[in-house]
Image 1 (cartoon, rainbow, N blue to C red):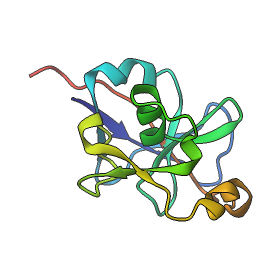
Image 2: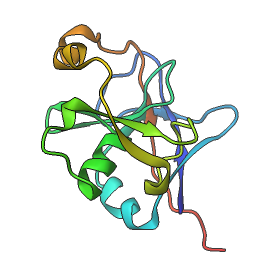
Image 3: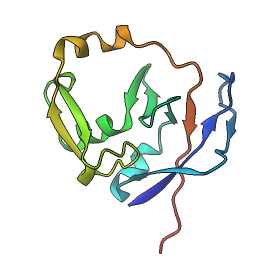
Image 4: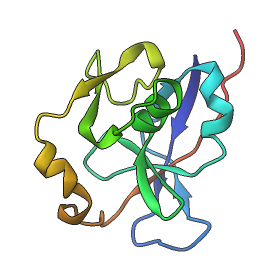
Length: 133
């Protein structure tokens, strides 16, 4: 399991590359060793007021836990499914902690992109390998 250190994006900064500042108290998330390298190819951020780790890939927002599950346990129609964190810790993104569950509100899922508003101040996630040991 690899530790991913979380940073936040500086408020009001939408420039690229983003301006990053450290949390007063460090925040971390975890992924499997096998997932670290391909996840670190993308920019990930923590949405304000949420522990869902998200990224902006190919002009759309994706959640890290959904991307992991779709890679290892693909579903034909993934929008009909939710991904549940077994321990309810959304920062614990190892495969053993994730499972597909049937979507409780499929009609709402169909329009989820239209209903959500863009976050005002997302927080950037920086992936960093931890020392072995």
